[in-house]
Image (cartoon, rainbow, N blue to C red; front, side, top):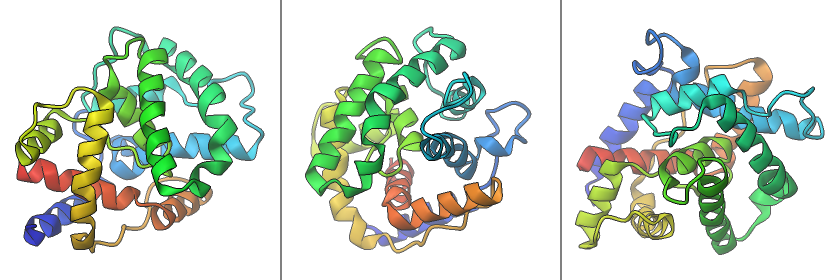
Amino acid sequence: MNTQIHENAALLIINNWATPSPLVGSGHDARSSENGLLSIMYGSLERASRFDWLNAGRTLVDKTYINILLQAAELDANGVTTTELASRLDAFVRAELEPLWAEFEELDHDPKHQLAVELVDKCAATVLGSSHQPEAASWLLYYLCPQLPVFPMHAALKEELAAKQDLAVESDYADFHAACRRQFARALPHIHSPAPPALYGEKRELEIINQILRGSDWWQRRCFLQHLITAA
């Protein structure tokens, strides 16, 4: 395992942590940074969970936030408008995430991984409208549910995993997740980079983002994914 690549990947992410994506608007929208995406997506659900999942008739995740993520991650929405995506995502959150939200962090290791795969598949089918849309679904859940071990799909990641394991490029999310999980277990002992502090958001948002970064392996997964992209 090339620890130098891991160190370079972590340094790159830290440098870009609060940097707006050049793919969004004029390249100055702080919400499009890694910190910003985690804050607006996970922050929306965490806030809703504290108010009995009520949102005064609005969708739990604003369509603007979804559009920012789609642009920043260069995702295909399968021809679905962001307004419709927000509506479908709202129904998905209330049906699939809300009932289990308080239990996510308490699940054992294997059930947590199994649930992550099941939720990505359900999100692809119900929100994106096709079971063949796991990429966008995995990115949505990666930022919405950092408590769960979701590995977002990416063309470069699939190619690199295929090369490492002498496999066909995984298009099925369950296979992709299993491949990531195996490689992540090997990489984790070499990921020593601590998560940077949250810099975007109101005081309460900063607190919850810092808490989730300390209490989950989201940052380690992000370093691992950047390592694969760097190595590809």
